[in-house]
Image 1: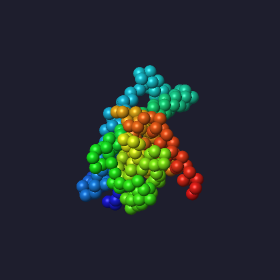
Image 2 (image 1 turned 90 degrees about the vertical axis):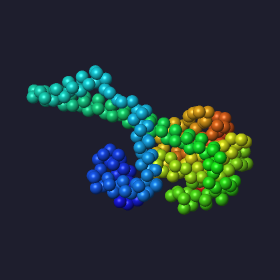
Image 3 (image 1 turned 135 degrees about the vertical axis):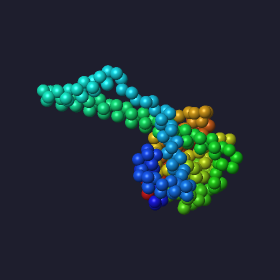
Image 4 (image 1 turned 30 degrees about the vertical axis):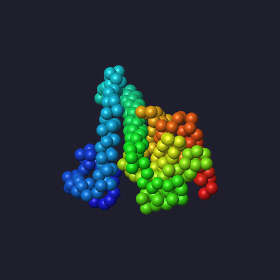
Length: 254
């Protein structure tokens, strides 16, 4: 058993498809490794959310009848050409059903990630949870992430525009550790979650409002961004524009 747990191996374990000896080895590793155990818990939570939110896709009666008719046609010895037509029809119908299922699955995954981001934001507002490194200096916050993440998040300070940097912290979303930059606007807190887009799920709505909090999401310059705050929409839009422009300028200067 090597570290970390491979995603495919854990999925096979949760599906009951892992060999008994491998399952025992995996269970022993999970009992000793907190990171892999958290990854497993995240997978279990995601599966539960999908089962809860994705409706069971049952084919309409008319569709089932057409597929049955196509299958019966394959058993008729005289139906050489009709058989191929029936098979093509069945394949087309199956492709449509599979596409619908994948779309529903993608939407459920996006909703789950949105809920995780919002939950992390609300949790951060509790006393002592907002920052791991408290500083308004980007040259202090950025180096703090070194050795704590497998990537170096871009850090900007917008104090001159009324959005001072307050600090940063680590958080855990969708089975991986992510960076969080914390900004302020008068009495409001703005959390910016980010991680490399190629290393984790990015599905989610571009804009959402839940429980009085506004969420904005996009992917740019190789990073997935989620911004959450109870700040008014116009000011939050202004802030996300500043962040996007700073990111673009930094990418162009490289």
